[in-house]
Amino acid sequence: MNVDEFQEIIYEKEDNGIVTLTINMPKRKNAMSPVTFLEIWYAIDAMEKDKSTKVMIITGAEDAFSSGGYFNMKMFETIPPELKTEINIMDIAQKKLCLKFWKFDKPVIAAVNGLAVGAGFTMPLTCADLIYMAEDAWIGLYFIKRAIVPEFATSWLLPLLLGFQKAKELMFFGDKITAQQAFELGLVNAVLPKDKLMSHAREQALRLIPPKGPTLALKWMKRILHKPLIDIVSDQLDMENKALNKVATSGDMRESIKALKEKRDPIFKGK
Image 1: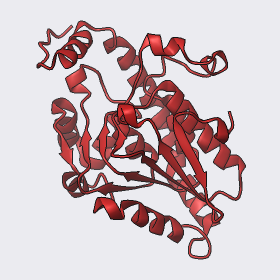
Image 2 (image 1 turned 120 degrees about the vertical axis):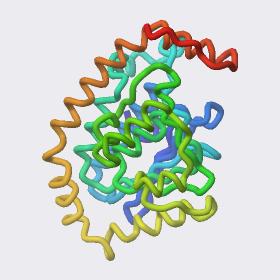
Image 3 (image 1 turned 180 degrees about the horizontal axis):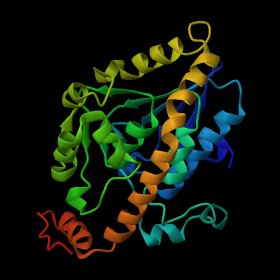
């Protein structure tokens, strides 16, 4: 897949090597389908092959970063056959994409411009090197409300960042997290007014490329930071996939979806 074939993201490359990826499905608040994740994988692949690219900025179209994962079997039937062969519907934790990011040695900056729910935040948390957030944006780690478990190796990363007690609190209760709270927890690098978010992200990107940034040293810095942890991340993604494939067919999961459609609180039974 070439970057000009993307349907759900926009790939924009500047002459200086800055590449901006925009998740571009605003009608569904930039919820990410298997095709979205595949296109992001190919965007990274394109940057790996193009030596003139230096840094990635990833953001969302309009007023959302991403409302999380988006999948149903009917939608899967509409995916072109040539793409279906590249999509593993059992890889709910997004191991393929997560490891692609972890082995990618160019800096990744996430500009979280609006709501970031589920994978809409776990993806940048695990896969971006720097995260900047609009002051009116917010995070929803709502996995527990949907009777599922986190993905993108977040079940390993959150305890590493926050300690077990705080990480469990966020995952067990799934309360909304404001941008300021995310900053105070150390989940994001800075909080900006919305109209200054992209310019700030771009300013930081410019610091990471010539003439200000020594890109060779940055590549090696990222490699040596990530290398000792890749096997841990890979194993955790396997565990998440095992858990997700188990709970995704549970009665509680079905009840959570039904309750969401009926705009009521779910009544869980623990099975």
